[in-house]
Length: 416
Image 1 (cartoon, rainbow, N blue to C red):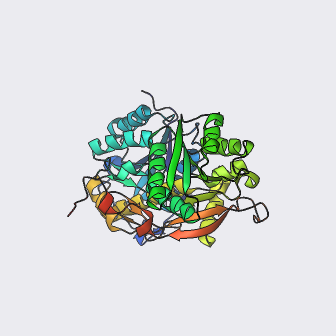
Image 2 (image 1 turned 90 degrees about the vertical axis):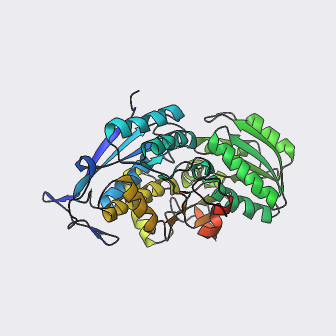
Image 3 (image 1 turned 135 degrees about the horizontal axis):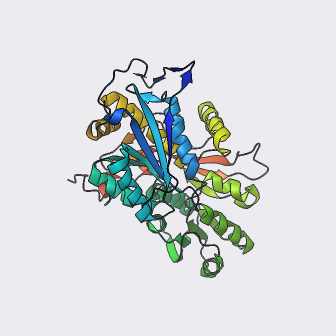
């Protein structure tokens, strides 16, 4: 099977023909000794949705995030060049798994540092476990990645359905929104997001009055929205992502969902969705993300460079690809090799600290834990500039944001 859309990029920052030395988190790249690097190159891969419903929130933006991490690292590690390859899985699990297998078997890829969408990601991570290769995932949200599908080389980076459910679900129920109807994308992430959020609603005294599942890429949400309106639920929750979220929000406005007194909650919303909708339609939506471009001077400077390349501000999936790539390269430098076991040990030992993710750590189940943020979308009057869309509602500390190990079904977690 051909790797449709696969691209290669060999990185190196050059000044007058010489590689530019850089210091990253205490690692001297200019003085690094040549060490055990397989095939004389560090090759990392990303398997994204380059042309489908998730292209705007993953796609070239996630690849660009990884490329910017490589540039930040100086284009080399341990004296060897860093190469980034990427491919389009077309939102098909079998293609995602096949790309991962070919990369590991024939293309000599050392690690996969993102796979868009949960179903292809779950397929690719099974290959990574079999081949004993590192796979770090920012774009997919299924909590299965660190539960029953976990593995010693599997890392879940930016977010998951548990974090979204507990941030958004808890906040809305506490505001009195205690009856929910779910419109669910019919695949692993949609199912997981609806279940986890429903569990949170019920745990806080609310109830789930109904749900409708629709295929990914649905254009017509009319029937589901009519059922949601007829249910009398206080919250119509969208357990979908990408263009599905944009289309369902637009059609909800046409059907007068919020005008009729129901609250519309996007459970996997991103800043790209807000941009696509416009503030007139998106204002008031609650969105949970792990990062926001406008948090401080450092995030603004990095995001402006990203914008110049992509013509959009980054979301947490794209900053996650940046963060995971940077952390992987730090671990290779610290380990003195790209050998999987040695690098994985260093990834767990070294705290995750970069422009967007602070004081993160990788747990035994592979979950990288960090703070999450609950935002509300601004009104048109509140926004002062393009992409000025969020106002911070709450910060959810790392130890509260993600599923506790006591609830994990990961075989690597030892229970008392």
